Figure (cartoon, one colour):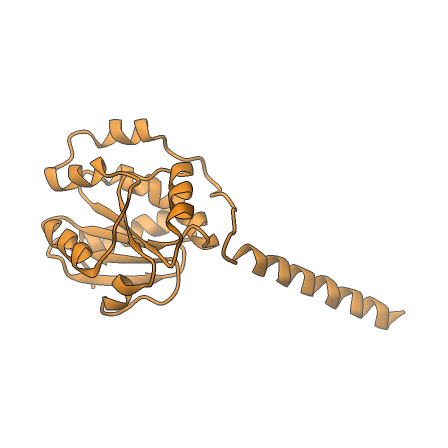
Length: 198
């Protein structure tokens, strides 16, 4: 009797581990926990942003053709403003979880901080469908083979990740993994991008 109970408990544990693993595979359609901010609300709140940041907002939610040159040129144009870059993919569960935090921060801080996305190892159609569901106030660059990410020093490992550049264009910090809360993300934006505390 005791042996059957032990095997039953072990079996339930394995089922739970497999279920958790399945939520992290490509094709995961889990939605973010929080409600999204509409494109109209984003536009209203970001009216009056400086020219370089307003240019990002006019490309809100777009997936731009990616190349190391294009991405580096965009970062150079944004000098004078702190920059936060989010590495994500439509199939990434933790990316989906943290998206509402990023969406809110990019609207609340979008008149002083630049936000960009790097859509890594993703399918353009899936990425566009995902962005249509959960609009953000900035564009993402396609990085289907991780060429942009692997050119960064230090290169991020795995998704999601967040890169924090100070206003001089210096990479201050690479955060690996998803953020557990809005507060944790905003604390790092303030510390590494706005203040530039390396």
